[in-house]
Image 1 (cartoon, rainbow, N blue to C red):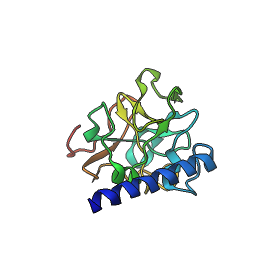
Image 2 (tube, one colour):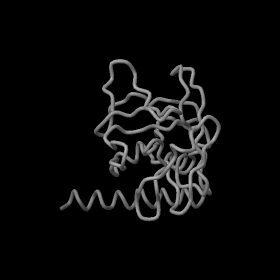
Image 3 (cartoon, rainbow, N blue to C red):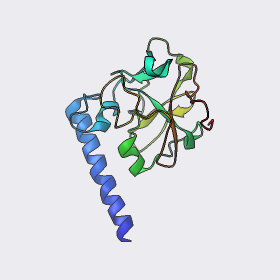
Image 4 (tube, rainbow, N blue to C red):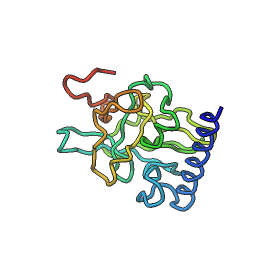
Length: 172
């Protein structure tokens, strides 16, 4: 019971800080209030495709240039990242009724949203919910690529709707 209470309090604290970052930052921020703010709820979320030399590939980024990742356990249909996971992997969210936009090099037909928490939806690409990574503290970083954290593998998303899976890693 004590552990359940601890997790509930932790969830409330993270949610309050997350919402404060959204209110104070007005959507995407530089990450000064909370790392999750760099990908937090936005009135108009934009998905762009850029070339990342370190990966020798075009990958998806949010409107501020932060890399967007998919989580293999999501199985192209729902967010499975729990509250501990969300601290490291902030979901790329929009409010209900708003729609993400396709930027340069992105297929509009692959952009969508999936349910997250009451009042929020996670931007998806080819049905994969999208996340940023806390250790990508500036645009253009891809430190989460190919990591096995929080119960599964994390991969960058490519504009063709497929994860960028390094040779030898398990395919989703």
